[in-house]
Length: 175
Image (cartoon, rainbow, N blue to C red; front, side):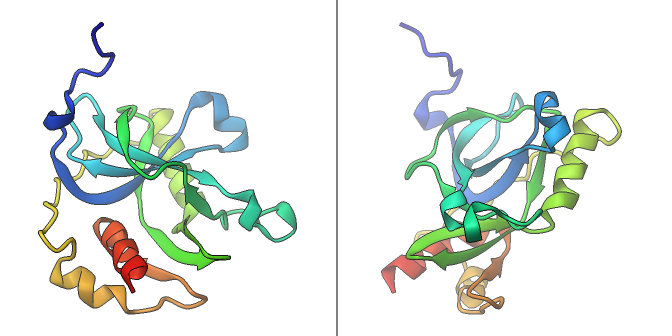
């Protein structure tokens, strides 16, 4: 049986991970979105390897997040094939932290980025092009990531450029 995915596993070229949000017209009234961490170069049709992150209400005070303050946990350990909708996504930066022993991320300027993504979806803005992949280095960390990894951003959060999030998480787990 043939695969629904046009790329074989070996055809997804690995890169330093980065994050994006994906929106859908069905979620416009609620300003909903999904958060993905991209682990490969993105093909022109949007196919890549990605890991989804889910809004973790178990980390919310009193079971509810303030607007723009959602914390997300990884939905899986490994990335899987995914297709980014070409006109319904927006690249985002994230803050990383630990709560109750669980590594989480928060989207920086969440509501502004959601607005931007919906403007792209509704044709009020042009989609950005997929980022050029940053190759993964043998040690998993570039010198910039190693320097940034130890700089706290306050309240137990560390703000890192997108492509350094995964390397920082690996370093924290090893520590």
